[in-house]
Image (cartoon, rainbow, N blue to C red; front, side, top):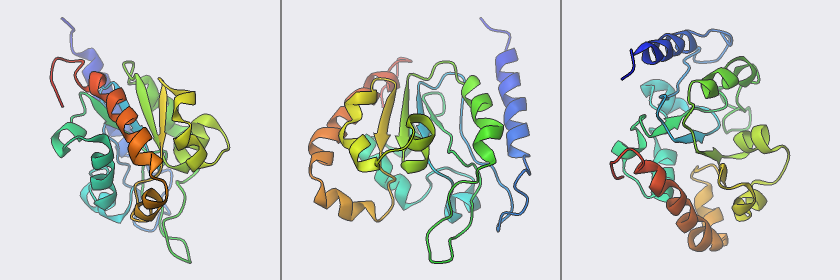
Amino acid sequence: MTDGSGDRDLDDFLRRVRACTACADLPLGPRPILHISRTARILIASQAPGTRVHETGISFNDASGDRLRGWLGIDRDTFYDTRRIALAPMGMCYPGRLPKGGDRPPRPECAPLWRDRILAMMPDIRLTLLVGSYAQAAVLGPGRVEDRVRNFRDVMPRYFPLPHPSWRTGAWERRTPWFATDVLPALRAAIRPLLAADGTSG
């Protein structure tokens, strides 16, 4: 039996993260968004929140989240069960839009300020899904997303690289049938025992 001090430490830490104003000049203002726990075994490391996520405060609460959950083969309840799955993007606030469209990259201040401390709060992580180029570059260094996704076995069992699940990825999936036939079954097989590790099923 624990005395609950770890949970109190995590709650205090999350309050500090969510109060961060290091990037006070963001177009919609700072609103750090993450969902973590000390018991999560899977970490989804993504890019940065979009506008809908900024509005709701819920990671992947949009069409990209629907696509990602489809890839994983899990429902919303499982996806947002922080006891098993942690969600922590490389940049925790909405970064704004580029002049020619699309979201800006994650703010460079965020990961150096918080990333190591976030990871230290999650000692049970066994698999990190590196979703998109920014998460992959931060962990694996330079490289092409498609090459990394295709060669996912090179970095397993610790990491599993995935493309960003934006609407543009639909066309990419149609051009790369190996993603559905090779990558997705392996992804689901990798997460299944981790989701069931606490005696529940996803």
